[in-house]
Amino acid sequence: MTVRQRTADRATRRVLTKRDCAQCGQQLPVQMFHWLRASNSYHSYCRPCHAAYMAERYRRLSEPRKRA
Ligand SMILES: [Zn+2]
Image 1 (tube, rainbow, N blue to C red):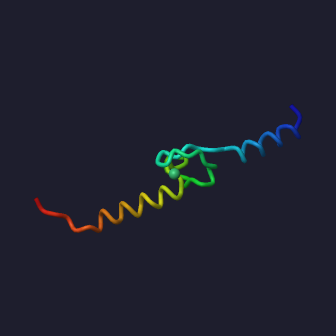
Image 2: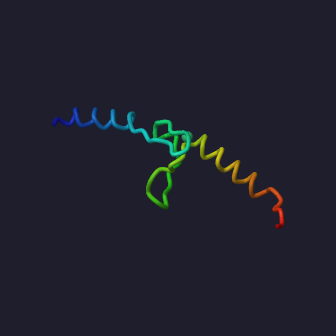
Image 3: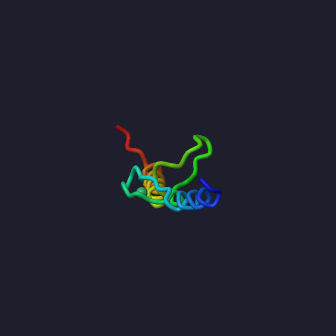
């Protein structure tokens, strides 16, 4: 493989690198995912889903707890 082919292959792969979102199930480019430095991988939720998840989590936590 020539250097030119390898470079082209790398460029193509970067554009085509996609990931399935665990929440909405859409296949999106990795640019749409948060990078988790701690686990050295991308988040399993895409950015919109992660934002929605965080908003929901915040809403649930901010709700007053009902005592049984
Ligand atoms: Zn998603």
